[in-house]
Length: 74
Image 1 (tube, helix red, strand yellow):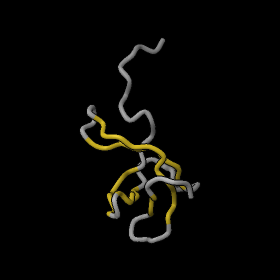
Image 2 (cartoon, rainbow, N blue to C red; image 1 turned 45 degrees about the horizontal axis):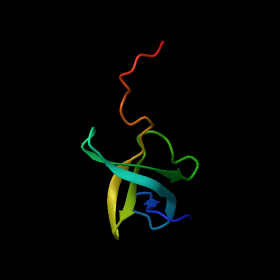
Image 3 (cartoon, one colour; image 1 turned 90 degrees about the vertical axis):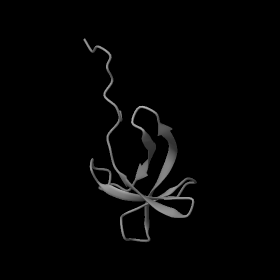
Image 4 (cartoon, rainbow, N blue to C red; image 1 turned 60 degrees about the vertical axis):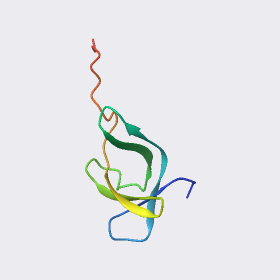
């Protein structure tokens, strides 16, 4: 796998993906990230764990954009 935080299915030790970028979101008041997951595990609402500084953090797969844009769409 590529560099970046590893993504795991809960309660397993086999990586299922990699985070490519992440940042705190001031709008959502939580951390957000983008990454790659194995095919079939990319569905909205899938719970995963991400290894951050040697600790597993809970996360949920969410479609982009993370926040609904408020601009007018014709």
